Length: 226
Image (cartoon, rainbow, N blue to C red; front, top):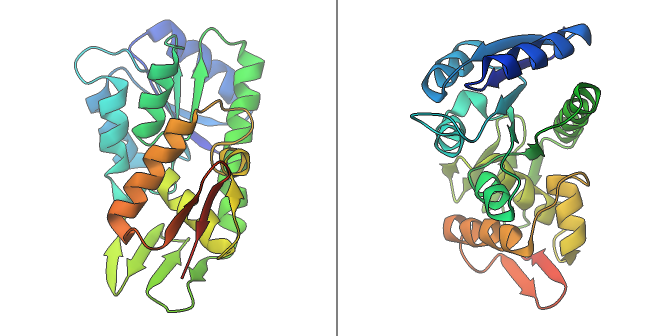
C-alpha cells in the first residue's frame, strides 16, 4: 500500500508541483486549498502525512494544525509545515501547535520527497517500538498503538510530540536524557528547534501528568522518576 499525503496549500501551482513529484515516487496525494477543506479531507481519508502551509487566508496553518491535533483518528498522522516563513518564531509556533517537522520553501522537489520519506520512517520506527510502557507503580500507562496515556485510570490524549517525549523519558526511568538526545529522538536530526520548544513541551506534560514525574537536571536535560 502506498503512503498517502494530504497537501493543504492555497497556491495551486505549489499543490500541482508537489502532487506530481510525490505521485512519481508512488505516493497517493490529495489536495485542499484551505484549512477548513483540509480538515474535512483529513477526517475522511486519514492520511499518513499532511503537508501544511502556514500563510493561508481564513484559517491559517497554525490554527489548522491545532485543530488537526484535536482529532483522535489522526493521532498516527504526521504533520509537516511547508512554508516560506523561515523565522525562528514561526518554526517555534509550528512545533508548539503540534507539527512533526518544518520545511522551508523554496526546496527542490527531490529533496522534498526525501524529507517526506525520512519523516515517514520516523513514524514507522516509532510504531515498531514497544507498544506499552508502564512506570513501576502502574499509575501511568502508555499505549503506543492508540497514542493514549492512562494516568490513575484516566485516559489522556496528548499531541504527538508530547506523547513521544514522555515515551522517550519513560523508556528508561532514572536515566538523564540530554537536550541534544531529546531533540534528535523526538524532532529528528533534520529539524532545528530551540531549548524553549523542549521546555514548552515539558511544561505542558507536567500540567497533565503532575510535576513529580519529570525532573529537570540543570544544564543537562530531563529524566523520568516513578
